[in-house]
Structures are given as C-alpha cells and as structure tokens.
Length: 310
Image: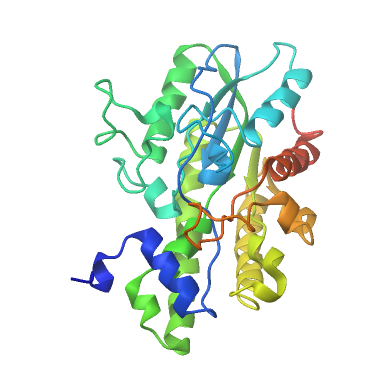
C-alpha cells in the first residue's frame, strides 16, 4: 500500500519535490556526515564550530561515517589559527549536526535530525537517543572548557539552510497554492530570525567575548543552469537568508558575516557536488561543498578573521 504524504521520509519528500514541484523553494543542507574520529581537545585555546552539515564538513566523497568534525572548512581554519596563536593549533570543538535547523538547535534534548555522525553526542552507553541538543551541548562544552582552563578564541556558526529545505518537503507546503506558499516562506523566515536571536544569546553565554563568524550560504542549484528545477526561486531565497544572517552578525559587537555566496557564484559545479546525487542514483542533487568548496569557505573565513584574532 502506498504511504500517505504524512508518512513520507524527508528524502522521499525531496524526491517528490524534484519531480512534481519544479518551482518550489529548495535550499540548505542536510544528510549525513564523515570525518576523523580522533579527538582534538588538547590545547589552551579552543575553536568552537556550530551549525549544520556544512559546518560539520559533510561530504559524500568520503567513506568515513562519523567523527568529531575536524574537517571541511573547520580543519584549514583551525590550521590557520595555529599560525596566529602563540600556543599553537587550538582545540577544535565542532558541535555541528548534519540536518540541524535553527529550531532543532534550540531543543534541550537531541532528536531528528539524529547526531550519530558527530561522536560528541554519544551517550556513555553508545546511544544517541538521550544526547543533548546542540544548544544544550554548547553550554555543557563551555563549562568543560572553563574547567580545563581553556579559552574560546573563535566561533563559527552556519545554520538556517535546513529550515528552508524542511519547509518545501512539508506536505502542507506541497499542497499549498502560490499565495499560501509565500506566506509559509515568510513565516519560515520569521522563525529563523527569532531563532537566530535565541541561538546567539546561547553563544554569547558560552563565550562572551570571542570573535564570532556567521557563515552564509551559496546557491548550489545555480550550477544546474538550464536544468535547475528551482530557477528564479533558489537564488533570491538564499540571498534573503544571507541578508538575515548578515544583519545578526552586524548586531554583535564582535561578530562578522562571512559571504560565501559571492565566491561560489559561477563556480557552483566546481565548489559543490550539485552535479552528483546523494545517495547515488536517487535523483536528489547533492548541494554540499566539494573539497575545493570547503577550501574556499576557509579562505573567506580567514579573510574575515584577519585582524580580529589576537
């Protein structure tokens, strides 16, 4: 018996979206993750990385299913920080969860999206069912950092793309007319805006004075050109999200917005995996950065951090 729309998985809904609603909004990032399972907790200084699969360093071009997130753009940025700090490379605490939204970040306990990819969320018994949410783990991590006599020297946060992806895979959105969809999009942005305010309060409670870098998003779908099922939709929506993120960065006295939309523009097929599918053969474009793309994001972070890191 076919599943009802309410029983669709997120991936099935994305497939339906690609096939049935070519003019819908689709942007963001989600899915699984990969990376080294080694610990990077030693050192006097700490680099905190927060957010979703972009922040975690997810890539379908690797085989490692889990780790602590010292990968993607986080690794080269931490390597650059090593040259700026007299104590050497900072300890990396990457709390990012693939599939995370601004709303799920604020949950007390972990739940869908599950965090099995990020080994920092495992309970002592190896279960992830009762692990804390990212915002809660941030507070726990801040206390641990203080207890170790460590000091946060940089924070990166990249989140919000999955809110939009979840919106367009919602049955209510799929069934809506154009006017109703626009209202749902506006409501989603209102939620993202409010959630960013709450998230940044948690960030500043954890690290009141550390330089904070809010990372924006590219539009990977632009790389599909004439074959883009979201032509005319994805680009203005991503630009709207980036404007919102930049406004929150400007409101923080030690905050900075990191623009990755501009350097990715016209290079989407090289800087993302958009011409591939996740999983292979699914028909779902993979909107995550390529290895080159993660390097570009790190470069933009370094530009933003130059002069801000003591």
